[in-house]
Length: 408
Image (cartoon, rainbow, N blue to C red; front, side):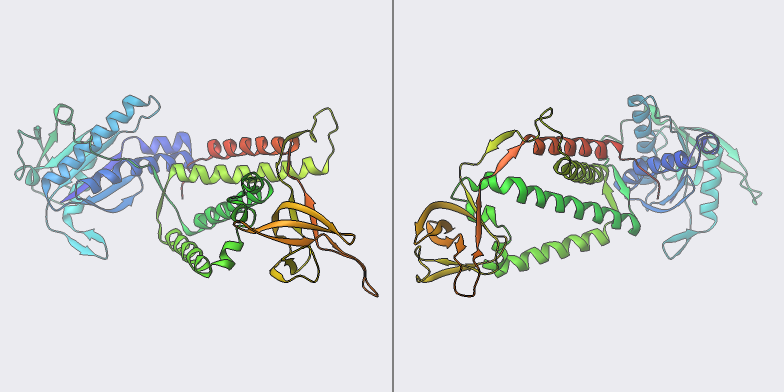
């Protein structure tokens, strides 16, 4: 069972609107019709320009799919005054040659010829197909004869009065999916990597300080990467997740439009936020904009380790036992400060209800200069940061709304 669809007036549309708009129109046509064919147990064999050729095992599946297609397009035209797409459909049954996911033979040629007899909104069914269907149930009317090219014997063709039939399209779930090719997948991966990078920057620069004001989650919030080293299985889990994502991205053929819009929006946020953050931090706008005004101040002080393998002691003494060694870049929550023998010590939270001591500066000794081990500071959220985040949101909206469906 072969079904052909063809868009009415597509040639003039391409001539008047150009190649890009013409290709978008065909893509929109395909995204509406493919789910209908699948729903009615059909298989899309191929697309030929703005035409679709599909095969079905049963004649009523082919006809019901054709009815659902016309009803769906009519519904779209009613909802959207700018949607004017109309198709003609031809259906014919017979024997065919199947080779490498393609179909050849006289049945294909005749189905295409039947489709070409119609006008927009028409469903034409060959007589050999109609005798296998209930003409009354499907309102097959106005039989007429025609002679296919290359044949002497005339054929009968019926028109389906689908406007008077029940709704066959109400159970069709239309998910706006777009086809993607390898080059586009690389772009998508680059957008995702950029978005993840900026999200990690936002976490390191802002969110971890806000979370760390609660001692219960301070250890995990301040140094999220330490979870991987403390629990080796977490690293394996993360690797599996990343590999699974890459496999899915390689194998996927179609992606929902909403996801693509969000990805593009995320890239827009990255672009606008990074540029504005760098610009605002390097250009002093003065008090007129109040960029240095503090909007938020953390409740706690934070200890930032600035040397490799800093020792955490049991007590504020260089002679005390070592409970842990921490690396450069680690942030710890400050609990108390003591001065012993002209050395300032920071009491820090190193685990849940577990504390240790870190020296701020190791004094100079014979032949050895003084060495700074840590810095202590508070977290401030300034008006400058708010400006950058606001511009980042503008960038997200720009990326989301500027996303255009482009043909592949």
